[in-house]
Length: 353
Image (cartoon, one colour):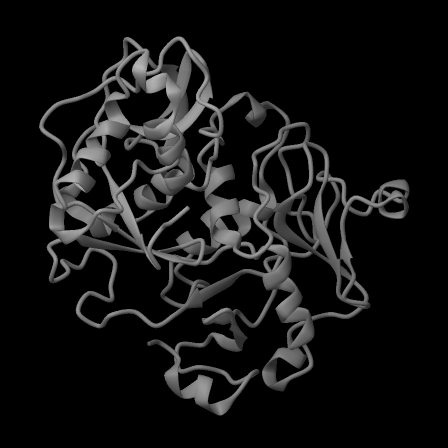
């Protein structure tokens, strides 16, 4: 694992790669950079959260990567007309693409509220004490509503959410300028296939870690395209932008499957029935999970060769989200007369409900 020695040296230690070890939480080791992401928009003081007026379901309080992927996947929607997603872009696009600052990593993200609170708790240890200004506010990636997102006060450690006091003084409005600190995380993984794009012994492909889970995918596309299905009915619960397994279970077990065929999800269900690659927990990914895969497409090579893939995320009774590999964005398309590829994934620890 990158940074093994600095983990042994303790929180606040500078790793050989230039990152700073910030602590462990739920089996994950967190690393941060030595400075905030500032002046990226010429403001001189922090950045806005962005996307004011739009709700992106970026509500994960424990893992920031799914929040970041959910927002970046919809950047080409009408919400782009409001303003830029500067806090998310600061980590998800600018830092990851900036070889002068990213220390060789392209998996930086804006932390969720509990991850950022870990940094606040450890802010006085070792080299971390030199990197955080006091008496200021930092964005988390955890969204509250279309107009507000969670902020942490680094003077007190208060997680500022939807309270009357915070709303009255507009501390958490998405258009406000706040500081941004990006993080990356790492965890133990079977060393047979530790890197994105590696072929594992079971002939699956390791993609990377997303939302506290290690994601694996199939090494080939399905030979034909499918409709999404259930094209005249809502599928209750299948609107999750981050958790494709929950959508998948709702779709294949839902009563709508007797009305018309659940095409794309059934592809993954058949893999489970056949124990493809010795696993029975394949599922159709949500669109934020597909965004995560698209971010790794340089590592995945020829495993994704089509222009568009169905996600398991439903928009309404007539539409679901497809994901276009060309621009790494999610778009709505009809469930009944549009044919798209289905590419199944699984995760460790195993998905279960």
